[in-house]
Amino acid sequence: MTLTHFKNKNQTIEMVDISKKKKTARIAIAESLIKIDKSLYQDIIK
Figure 1 (spheres, rainbow, N blue to C red):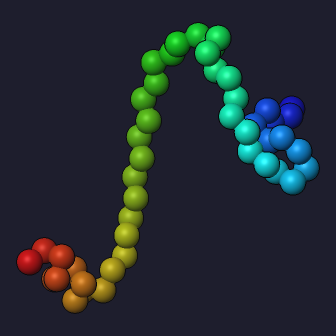
Figure 2: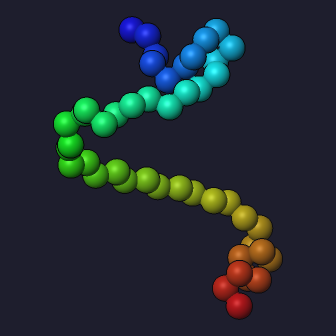
């Protein structure tokens, strides 16, 4: 399988025309965890 977004071996990224693709409904869910010092947390919640 080849990736159509890469133009050459230097991995130059180019735009891909998606105008003829069928429309689909999608849901994306993201989650993150950020660890910070207690003192920074205290400053943030003030």
